[in-house]
Amino acid sequence: MKLVVFGANGAIGQWLVRLAVERGHQVTAVMREGASASVPQGVDVVRGDPLDAAFVDMAVTGKDAVVTALGVRYRRGRNPFSSIVSPLTLLSQSAAHMLAAMKRHGVSRISMVSAAGVGDSRKTVAWPLRVVFRISNIHVDYEDIERAEALLAASGLDWQAVRPTTLTDGASTGTRRVDRYATTMRIAREDVARFMLDQLEQPRFDERTPMISRAV
Image (tube, rainbow, N blue to C red):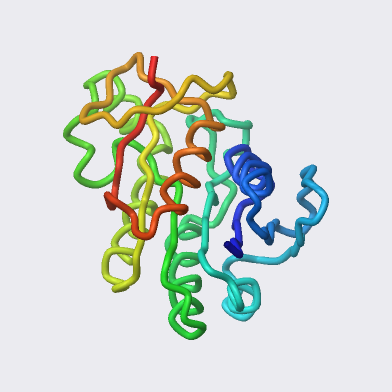
């Protein structure tokens, strides 16, 4: 497949690019201006703003599928109690541009990194986590993810929004689908990328909003 990966400089995005190349896919890695990440030989790197409709249109042209691993940036690394420095509509606005470009160019499939606790999975979240989500800026992030998911659902395209539990940089342990989000649940970013690519390599996604965690 010819894949375009938005957010390719992020932790999940880098795994998506690396694993997709290992599987023989042709990859375009989209990064924001000034971002840097090591990419395998043969990857086409393009830099620009995912909120720029013309740039997104260019990046999507000629692809078989779109993958977005975009995520908001916090002022203090991954601390969700710090302020969000990204535009607060980053995910929904970029998704709108991707979907419009896909329809113009006949691209039918899109996979997005979402989060456990978004949308109808909120009721499955353990109460201590719900408290953290509510009092931190995670709730602001989740509101925009929900807007992006709604756009995907209304698009008429073949879409999937993957909802991982708490992310880690640990070693791959495999993936399982879950129907609740307990405080102890974790999943490696590498495993999220593997799951997304496994799904993309099927003729159609078998579930729209799978919630996933580590297998062991």
